Length: 84
Image 1 (cartoon, rainbow, N blue to C red):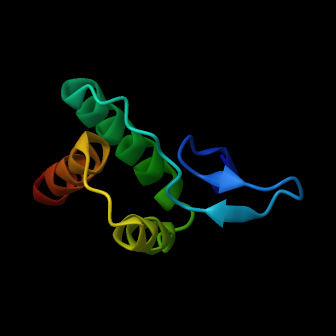
Image 2: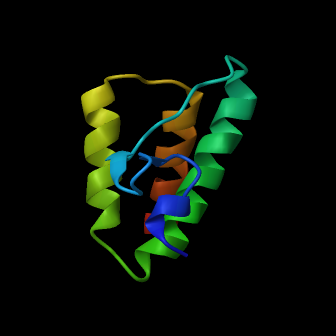
């Protein structure tokens, strides 16, 4: 799978990634946490071919300065993977 097909990555009409974290929270905290966990699972699979992708996604999250259930779920899943 190409990183461009990850559900949270935004690409322009030329197929160039313009945002590594293009998410819109639903304002349902539990659903957003679940979405964030799913996003990390997708990213983790993609990282097998491109481990630096994680850096780009985390940088985009930090620059967005938005902390919702999506981001919490994402980092929760990352932490779970680190201690597994």
